[in-house]
Length: 183
Length: 387
Image (cartoon, rainbow over all chains, first blue to last red; front, side):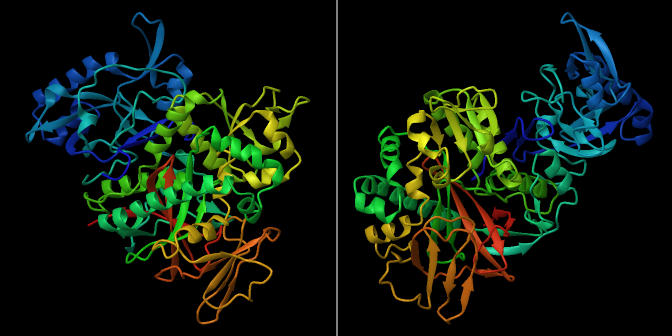
């Protein structure tokens, strides 16, 4: 590759951004809730529920964290943040807005699903779903193509302040688009 | 090297806003133009652009010592006498430089020809290093460019790395400065400042017009803190000529680009390169204009030694047609350079801006104009490598 593998901006953009050169892509599917998953008819109801439960159980642990409710609501919308206290004082995290699962060897990887959040600041003027690391996944629920790293299980939560998605949380890969195709 | 039409990203203006690119449209005219791109082969990039850039840069750097040892050459380059010792001292101390852009005429075939070195205040940096990179990634994501498409663009990597390398030797913080009302210049310094922050450097920003001078000849910010290190996107020769100029040598300020860069951003470097390397395949024949020089003949260009953005250039093509760009830079000596018409692609004249960061070739950006003389009205068009 004769170009930088990543580029970033800390100060210059409306929010810090880290972009990574195109990575291998994989199929993923996003559902708002169990009912939408069942209606999609790709998974059985049991699989839909198992995937939802797993994402929900991860949610409080991995969700983006803010010290101020206002900062959280700037990114995720008014009334869309909840307070949590996990030993680091009161922090604010967005409500889980959907869940996503990838496919492994052509089969849905429903036991490694992850929670998604609906961000108003990661997609320019309109909103879209991001994962717990702030990476845009898709503008809408349904099938999507995402970078492989975006569907990897999140390893840690990051404490954030204003304008979210700081330098250590990255907006990689499928940047800026719900309609990613190819890689 | 081909020019290929492509659909614009429908959301690129939103993306630009989000990514701090505020000068994509200048005075209502497009500056960033992604309705087409240039495609190069890897061989064209590596053999015809990257390698010659490294060689030309080294040839230019080798001239600095020659010039500093010769009052005659300093006279020829019209370096103001009051600053010569300071310039020489900055070179002797090895004050590091950051970046430069050489403009090359290249049509995909045969040797690229050096038009000039923009080694003091080069712009079009953010669009080459960052926004062009984002364009490639997004067009690949959206399936409009093949997965194998690459780009010659290590500019940001090398900028951040260079800042990290030179930081330990610089006083802190590092101020970034440009003319207050130039959106383009402010955008360029904002980007460079961002790169410096990424390298862990403590930075500040101040408009050139706001810099103060203290009673003891130190430069100060708006809170009267002394500015000890300054990146200035403002020509050294302007600083020399202006009211605070005489304070520079005794102020102790460290500049990026350093004072010795004044020698290389001066178009007098072009005849000096030709004198030292006559017939070099990447050079155009060039001479200093003297009182005994004949009238400008067909096939020659006349350029002021100090000028920016194509201003005050006169070009007579071999067919005798005359091309003139007006401008404010008519008070310095002139050089003459053999005319090398820019290649024409779909009605656009394209010039390759080849970036050098520290001493390494780093990437390219292409600007197009509808006239043979590339002006500040030119448009930036992205490129890919595709074999």
